[in-house]
Amino acid sequence: MSTNISKQKREDLLAKIREIRSFISAAPQDENTGNLLSYLSELEKNVNGNKYGLVFEEHQEEIDEILATHIPVLTEDPNLFIDNGGQMNFLIEGDNLAALELLKKTKRNKIDVIFIDPPYNRGLNDFIYDDNYIVSTDTFRHSKYLSFMRKRLVTARELLSRNGCIFINIDDNEFAQLKILCDSIFGEENYIACFPWHNRTSVQNDTDISINHEYILAYAKNRRLTNRRLKPSNADKWYSLDDFVFQPKETDQSKYRNPDHDPRGPWKADPFDAPAIRENLTYEIVNPNTGESFYPPKGRHWRTEKAKYEALLADNRIVFGKTGKTKPQLKVFYHETQLKGEIATSWFDANIFDTSTNGKKELLTILSDTPAEKMFDTPKPTKLYVELLKLIISPRLSNGIVLDFFAGSGTTGQAVMEFNKTAANPLAFILCTNNENNICRDITYERIKRVIHTENYAARLKYYKINYVPISERMYYEYADELLKYIRELIELENGINLDGTVEIAIALTEEELDDFISNIDNHDTCSQLYLGHDILMDAQQAQALQDRNITVEVVPGYFYKELEG
Image (cartoon, rainbow, N blue to C red):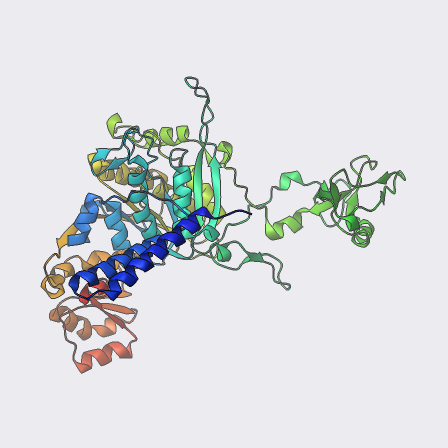
């Protein structure tokens, strides 16, 4: 009989804590005994904590200290606005943890897809933690990485829509740790798959083995929702239970023929036997063309019971090879597979999903005049994310949003625009990246701008920068007016719009702006929402005018900063 040693040790320690608590409780009570009892409760809570999972030293970053005393805000660089029609997209320059905090205020439960290509922490100057590269000899190398990722992934989960998914590129250096971390954040039940990506086809000759793959870890917000499909009895095609699921691939018609001119159309022959042994499925089948008897191969059984087989045979659904003399096979018609498509596999072949080498060539072609020291060594190829979007985006999903908060070279943005060329409902993207070495402006933005021009993508882009408003030792009312200066950008980000060009959303931050809006309210017949400055008091007539036109009023900045009002 096995014994859970850790559980036994834990119970022994809890018993000792209870003894100490009883001793302290029996002593005269004062401030010190109260503190000791409080400490014991904390110890008990920690002992009763997670029984399984990662244990690592948590580290605080410089950005944590900034966010403890400051509120991140957005400012737009209007000179970088791109307007080529189509969806409104956003590029946010600044620390991605701060960017995620802003997205929590505007896009919580609204992001459908997250693609991230975070640092791999190879110890080769690829992961910067608080302005310092993490080297392979750093004792806390993995702890720093996990602390860094945990904060960002916790918020990422909050941003995902009910049916949303996240895809994380990683290699062997942090794969094992990251998988367990993601299990704890997203839940093991929401794990979709680990997709090995055949990311290079050339062989590395200066080592004992050439590593020619990476991984893409995939998790859903609610896996039980995204892993089901049904076919209504009265319908002629399959429907998703939800708008966002892994979509079956279109069936390859070239595999289907119709040599016997079957009126049901092209078909292919599938094996009639299946793995395992079931006694009721191991009957004799006699080839009607030769009289030869067949039984399932060793360790296998037939796919149906005998009565069902005989019905299939009578329906001309069973064939015996091209010569008619071999074991039975089942006719599978092309039109039947079209009802549900072909399920995707977890292997991402380089021939379909492209390679890292081509990703770098692609970036060098787009930014041929960019200095080499600014270029990314391993940008992901656009095709990788385009093919992923084809697998996971339902044609019925409208107003879908793709987020990448490690945007780097901007591959995700280009992939979304390329996908939109043939999509039933185009997607929008939000990219976040820091501006170390002017990367955001010179690489991410420049790439998006150039491909919009060269490929004539129907897309618009706003460029935001993160700034900070100090709030330490200040009451909310003392800096609320300062937050109003940056509220326009949050409104645009929340609604995916350019306020200068929309009629559905309005903003009034002063009494004069509200008076002007009400005076011209007949010209705002399509307006559905008004963002109102916090210190404006509407009179009854103004409130009635808005109510009569079903215009929702949101008071700012409190609408975005509810946690600060109290």
